Image (cartoon, rainbow, N blue to C red; front, side, top):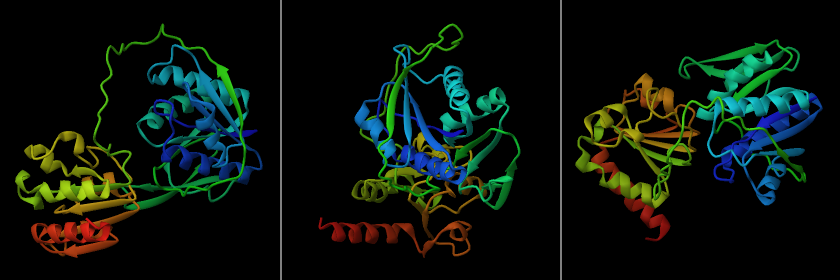
Length: 323
């Protein structure tokens, strides 16, 4: 028996999300008195693979094939399911990001496994196997009981602390099959965004809403983001107005993010917006309306005009950084 943790890599490198998954999966393995096995697909060097042991993986499997160039949910599902069978995995852990959401339902059907999506805590019980998750856009909570022999869990980003370990994981590289006959999409070119922190990777996100009044007023947000090494975001009305690009739109109909700090400036906090940012560790809101819904979700709030508060905030950060 084992706990299998699928760990995504980006061009052969792991991110904080990867180590969060291994920390979580290894703790479930301890609860089940079994081993934690991390699996990643695509070429990754041994030094990078060894990092997974530092967060609790007993073994690390690197599934490789020269044909693996891009993510393909069909082939990835086949590879992970094959190792789940081989390793007698009773629990499979993936991230609740776009990759995990593509793989988990496929694995659930193939392995006849119950699926707990977007969980954010360790199982409350092993018998019965009960997991905790947010529901109704974070407005309520539920304990889900999974009764199947195999359980699949997708972990909400930034919901579990990193737990370092002194383990030296056993690392193996395994050649796997990569079937191109069933591929229906051909990728001719890949263009990667450079010179900008991706919203889904950022620890700090600074977001503006209609309270900014105009695209001409975005300067202080950009300056503050540069000082803090943060990504910039916006609410849907802002992107609809063309003030900011659509790839910065966060919310239920945009990007769902979970940074350590989300600074919401001039955002009222509609339900659809909060659904996309409610998993942030800390939310700080600046708004003129003391009754704005964003304050109910925020740990800290400033009631005031963003046009007056932002410049003072920028100056305070500069002073702290000695700039």
